[in-house]
Length: 284
Image (tube, rainbow, N blue to C red):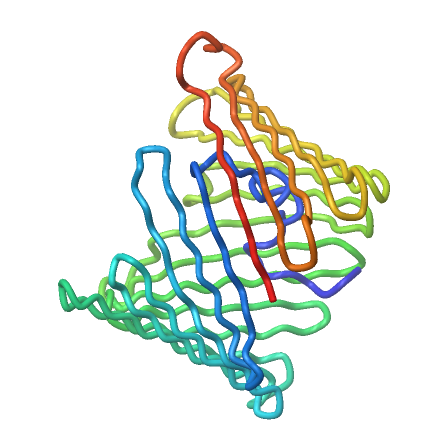
């Protein structure tokens, strides 16, 4: 088995297949990536929603491999500023420490967070501390042995001395397939996911979710991905409510990707509930 993933990534393969590279969620999106000669990576993103609202962000990241230090600065169209400093494999092998500082000039709101991540061959643990809200702390851990995974997470309000949320998860990871069962929201929402890399061209996955607080209905979603050739692929998914989505991604030239997507409510084909979106990515 590969290295043990983070607790939140126990079902990452299935979740990515069901959610990534579907472009109908916004009417249009643009992403530009570039790296300067002194190793500063810039990323500019912009999105236009289906209700004509626009948003965007600019990110600058500098990494020094010799010291393990990475500094990231983000500024978005909501005029929110965020600075993140990461220190990896310096204090101890497998240990990464992060400090995240945010500021919203319009309301003078501030945020300070400290995160720790420790990763070994059969263990992956994390701790997140919000120093100004509460303060609150959340921890999660995942252990693995011969493909089997098990772990849990908990959130704690220091001021109230109270556990506010907890969850558990088990899974199995193999080279071409994996499965996971999670119980979140204080063990009230249960999900089971499955991912299978059928061959070099085809991937398939599904996810079932049941919320014990809202009723007996189980939500189901299935998806598949087919690689047409080395530079393009198509994806499709459908859920138990009859909402289907399709997507097409193609590498137009080196560093230029185009994504096209659409979603349809198969039970309301005569109504204006369908969505179409495009995505364009430039990377240098």
